[in-house]
Image 1 (spheres, protein in one colour):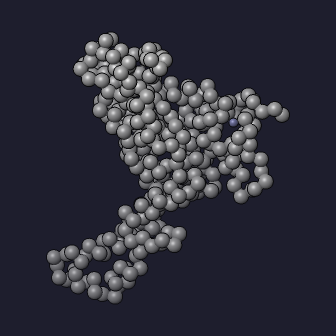
Image 2 (cartoon, helix red, strand yellow):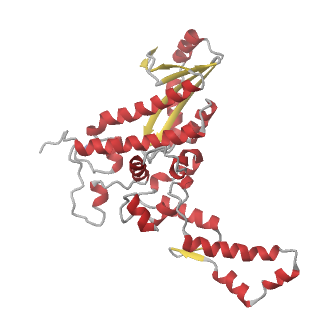
Image 3 (cartoon, helix red, strand yellow):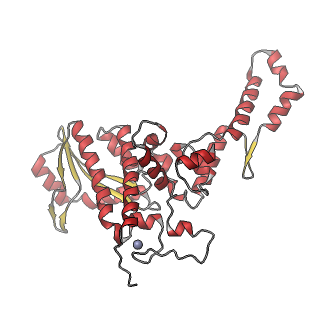
Length: 330
Ligand SMILES: [Zn+2]
């Protein structure tokens, strides 16, 4: 099954077992790990017999066959013994977060809704886009740095700027992909606008607000029923502290000049400062997810935002590969 899934999703051969089998809400693909789960299910069923009110059923546990089941039905994954399915799940998650490709997925469980698209089979993304999004989520794109693993003398330099060509470099910092990074950001802003308009918000995009520190331009002002929210979208590195990224945006915009400006213009009862802070892996800060839900946006919106950020990630990679723009002297 593993090799079939790897080939359908065009995943590299060294895709970790943990990425394939960790639950989608933990950042994996959620494929059942049958060779371990079936023995654990048998064990749980046998153990439940001990709770039976029927003395005959309980007595069956004393038979050599039942004892053997209880003894043998533990399983071991890479040397760690697990005795329950829950234990197996947390072990897979731990292994995922300690792998080179999976490290950036550690914040995944904070926002369960953002993973719906992975397993829902609802065609949030078409087949091609789904495959691309999974590869970005798992850091499984063949970059110079990734391809050089185990080959110490390979050139890993980005042919645009000379820094190591990692996926995080292509998606977050290479000068070549600057324009498509802005397009990714704008695409998420567009998604917020269309979803918020559907639930009755009136919206102002990129207002230029004068402050003593200069003009500030938050992405969006959303107004509904005398409540006003100033919201900024940011897509950050996968080792950034997402909650901090959310808070930094709040602090940046929550200044007296902006509050006064918004008060004069909209006369709201209440003003909130929020962010949609997400890593390039499509993982949201839990504070951002909570803010989006407070605005009335659905769990489906959260899943869609995650999937869309990843789909845009594949566009950025394609842009990087097609372009010949360089700042290196050759
Ligand atoms: Zn570069």
